[in-house]
Amino acid sequence: MRRKNEKTEDVKRWFLQEVERLWPLALGSLSLRRGPCIRPNCPVCASGEGHASWALSGRQGGRRFSLYVPQGVMPEVQQAVKQGRQLQELMREAGQRYLASLKRARGLGREFRRKARKR
Image (cartoon, rainbow, N blue to C red):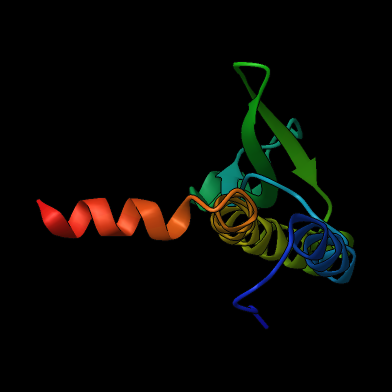
């Protein structure tokens, strides 16, 4: 819960507790792909349906990546991706709370609001 007179250390403590609660984490997108196999005369490939497989895709260091996700670990990876998105939202909130606490600590919040109202 957000407090009005929160200090930067309070924001840090809150953020680290929330991150620990979110583990495991993954950043990227999951997609179901369908493609042919290497077996000759495969009935699934011949039907045009293709074999289904999951992939985790994203960017790392400016390069795209795509990793095969076995069906057996799919639920865990899906949960990690969901929690990775929650972490991004948490980071946005942490940034806002951190800035607000810095402004309060330096007495900049009220001064800025007064100047903005006079305009």
